[in-house]
Structure formats: structure tokens, C-alpha cells
Image 1 (cartoon, rainbow, N blue to C red):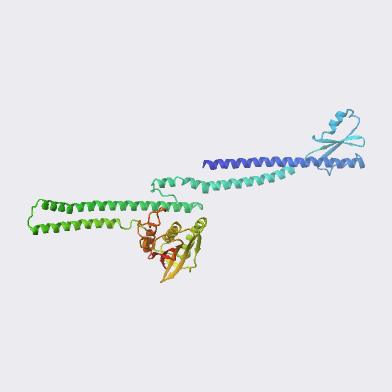
Image 2: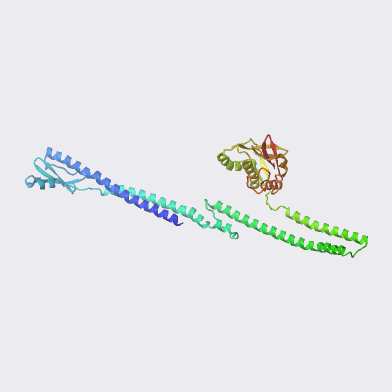
Length: 420
């Protein structure tokens, strides 16, 4: 904000300099023009005196010269005083030598009305422009700088995990939607944090519960082991009973372990999907708006196939996420020559295929690319978590769709199936 105030002060100072400079320039220009005009009148009057004489001179039509005085040549005996008298052009009179006598022409500038009109018009224009400029600066301060100043600490607060304070509603045409989006992001982060805490609490509770439950069969197994080691039972039937009990307790422990493995393998993403609908053209427009420029910079040929617009079933934002994940994989693992979006219809579904040239994944690994944390043999030089396509499959299944991958003529094709 201080930098903006300094900028405003500089702009105001420049406007003041222009204002003063323009007034000075106008004044000097008028004086220069009118300073020559009284001489024109003096020359005209001198010619009339030569023709008609001094007594018949009419000064009513003159704008500058208002009086003429005749002097005989005798008083000016000294050449220097005469020369000095004749060079009085910068005073309020001028001298002319006509027919053996000197004539003094008294003049006035008479610039007040003209200068006032021209200067007033110029000053009015400068004032109006200055007010418009100040209004624009105040509008920028009130509508752009001030709202941005109010939320400049928000990224820092979010990075520190301070998510409880909501942002005030703002209908600002520049930042209203941005503030709404940031507040929505804050709420989503807060909800995700709650879900993670709940999941951690549930997992911790499960581990503690299973650990406690395991102690009982484990103690029984240890007890049976001591009995056998000390030969307390010599009867084969009793030993057989102990062996069956150990086997049952081991199965019980195995059941607890299976329960833990199942719990750890549950959907840890906890993704919410809206049951909604959207047009195929919306999905294509959203995808191409970003990747056309990106692929142009990468010098990768990008083609969008022909399609027939229709309404698709699912969550629009999640569907965009699916297609973007597919596109990112094509950019990351393709050879960079070409990527295309292709469309087909089959059994009431629309198939959206992202196809990239240069497949580097063995076909034997296609079955595993949608598993969580799985990364193919072609990902050694590329960073990643192995969750992209797993998230795509989870989202498509929740939207009553599907996703699959195949290799066609050396090209990698990942297809998302949307229901109409």
C-alpha cells in the first residue's frame, strides 16, 4: 500500500508540473504573438501619417495602439540618446521617424480577455483530466489494491494450518470470485484435515483394539507351548487337543491380521463425487483451453477428434480431473511427438480416449497401472506417486463409469467411459 501511495504522489506531482508548465507556455506564446502585432499596427499608422498627415489619424480601429504623440527632430541632438530612444521596443511605446519628425506610439497589450479565455479553457481541461486520473487512482485503490491488501496474509495463514477463520463475503468484481474460491479452498482443506484426523484416529483405535485382542490367543499359545515343553500331558489325545487349540488360536490371530490388512487397504482417498450432469463440449473446452498452449510450448502436436455433443452423467470437476490426469500421463510418458483426444459412442456411453505416440510400457503391465502406488517399469526417470490412474479409476467408478488402457499400433491409449 505504501508503494501505491508513493506512486499516487508522483502522479499528482507530475500533473502539477504539467499544469504549471502549460500555463507558462500559453502565456509566453500569447506574448510572443501579440508582441509582434502592435508593430504591425504601428507600421500601418506610419504609412497613413505619410499619406494623410498626423491630424487625421483615427485610432478607433486599433487593438493595441491607443495614442500617438509627435516630436520634432530637434530635441534629439545626441546620436546615442536618439538611438536609445528609438530602441525602446520592449517598453509600452515605440518610436517611428516620419517626414522629419519623431512619432511616439503608445500601446497596450490587451491580452487579458484572450489570455483568460484560452488559459481558462486549458486549465479547465487539465483540471478535468486530473480529476479523472485521481478518480481512476482512487478506484484502483478501493477496488483492487485495498481488497488485495486485506487478503495478502491468507496464503501464510493457510500454510500454517489456520483454517477456522472464514473470509468475509465480497462482491468485488475483480476479487469476489477469487475470494470465494480461496474460501472454498480453505473449507476443503479444513474438511480434508478433519477426515485425515478421523482416519488416523480410527486406524489408531483399530491397532489398539486388535493388539489387545491378539494378546488373549497369544497368551494361550504360549501357555500350550510351556505345557508341551514340560511334558505335562503324555496322552496323545490330550496333545492332539492342544495342537487343535493352538491351530484355532493361530487362525484367530490370522483373522485379526486380515482385519488390519483390510482396514489399511480401504479407500484412503475419501473422495466426494456429486451426482450431476454436464455437456461433453464443456469437458473438451476446459481441457483444450489449458493443454493447447502447454503442448504448443512443448512442440507436441495436439489434435481433437470429431464428437457429437451430449449430456454426460457425473461430476464435471471430477471428470475434468480424470481427463487432466490422463493428459498429464500422456505428456510425461509419451515421446512428445503427438497427443490426441478421440471420441466414440457405445451402448449409451461416450468413450473419451487420450492417445499418445511412443508407448514405453510393456503390455504385460497394463493390468496393474490402475492399482494404487504401482509404477510401471517406464517411470524410473519420472517422479510420481503411482496414484494418478488409481484416482481416475476410483472417480470413474463412483460416477458409474469406467476406465481402461490398451496399446494400439505402438500408441498408448487410455479411455474413460462416461454414461450419457
